Image (cartoon, rainbow, N blue to C red; front, top):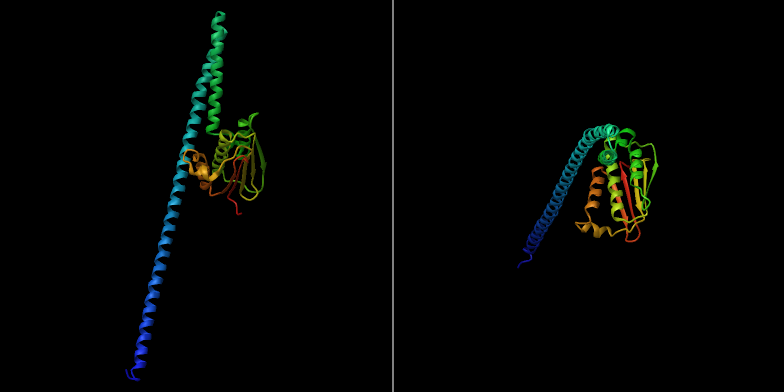
Length: 264
């Protein structure tokens, strides 16, 4: 090969190498861009699915609350009124009853009706706490704690009011959240004390702690039979757009830290 042709060959080789490097770079760029785009589409799809699940959950819970309100109203206004009327009739019969046997039978029936009326009132309050609509979340939680507290398990409530005021639409969901956590603790924790602290300084800061048996959080979540209650709690927190930290170990009790509408 002549000396004159060497520069041309070197130029062709350099150009070819540059073209190959450009093509390789373009392919790598395309692969990275494609993977990034696929990841972005997947994230967008997951976000849409998550938003859909939240909306579906919200509609489901709202439907449940509407049905609870309807049943509570029917129990209070319908069944309760009928039982009260039956009680009045029994009082009239007792006053005009002849013989000790008839009087004793009426007294027994009256006692059964009184117990049934108390049961209907209790169920009605559980379905829709009247104190929530009349006096707000704090009074409703206080009343709930007093009702479920027993000598075996004391349920203590502490309120730390601040400047923040929880929207009216969120008060019932927060009450249901507290109700769910406390009922779970009463059923499974074997605790001597359950402490509820509700603060409203910057949003809602809710802390619920018990000194019960505790549990392995990861193991409970993985168990479809045991994790339903925890799943419901997490869903309620998500629906309220809150954040929850759950701390629990076997033999060391359980603590829930929940922030709702908080900037922190």
